[in-house]
Image (cartoon, rainbow, N blue to C red; front, side, top):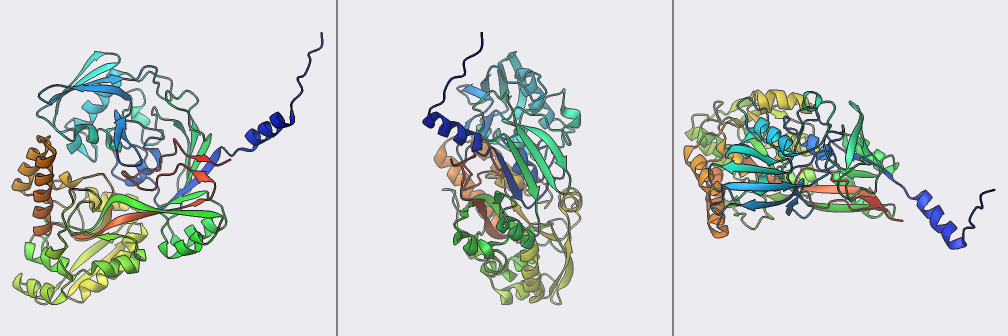
Length: 491
């Protein structure tokens, strides 16, 4: 018997045509290419930009508004003394290679991150963990050495995503996670491709394919967007062009906040920066607003400490380091450098660093400090500055969320070693009362501001230029991520 083909109504035909034409791929440009693809072992923010939430997931995760919500952990219970967290994991979660994600993988990930030989860039997130115990395949218990009011927040960082022992050996080049997208291809120097995870445990993303392109040059970035070669540019590096895009109906411009404290990083163990008077002189030699206007075309909020101004616990400490070249010269003379000195200024690729570096070098010359600029690629910066600590000054935006705790690590690249600050951070970790935490955070901000650990410049704004039909993009960046899990095209 011949099959009878059903007739389609005009409405059904229109619906079918609409579905057939709906765009399901996207090309996103960002400025920096990740040096590797292991968020648990690499320090570069570009790793999270591509992979956070898209490929890798943690027990908890950040939403676009900065809130912390359940991730791979469906729920959790906290003991009365605040030291034991019992996580209940989602059932039916698989890694992209088909292996099951369970409590053993959580234990492996947390134990690996806190191990003595760990290369995790934020190893301090896991310092308070004393034990990770598998209760059953979907239940894992984490014991801390004391209450930590930031623990669930810390578990949302990209450095705390869950990985598997079966795929860890090749993670730097072939990332295997549990996220809504799988890693497809990486053409180094050009692009990285993701594909929809058809077996995703959560809500399926609207996009089938996503391509990240890496365009560091501001002129090339402008050309790529104008030619519509890319659909989205997150962290658009030429803010002077934003008015042109705003006036063009083809595009939308989103300007939001980041967690990026942009600082003049200072090597506190390298002479002469081991002298507080010299660091203070540098702080007074800097005209923040000139840097914001000249390098960022007005996008950015001046800061006087390492803390985000949009955080309710932020303390305005700009008065500790106003622009005062005469004061800077006096301090240099008092420190024994009346004739100035020469140092290095090593700059990573972002335009805020390259453009800002030129301005800062000029400002430092006015007080007698000769800063010799070296423009480094991101991998070079990681090796020389972050790992090798071979620098005098640098410029970088620390985009990790509420990361003032890095100042408690004397081995961190700017090498600030203050036992009083370290004790304060331990007290903060053990404090759960909101008012008490606010007081301690205020003290912490004040200490590093008055010690002039680094030159505090501005809170980095993030500008995104996208085609008019793209929806679901993050406006703000509570962590350095381009989360595509809820991005779609308007029909």
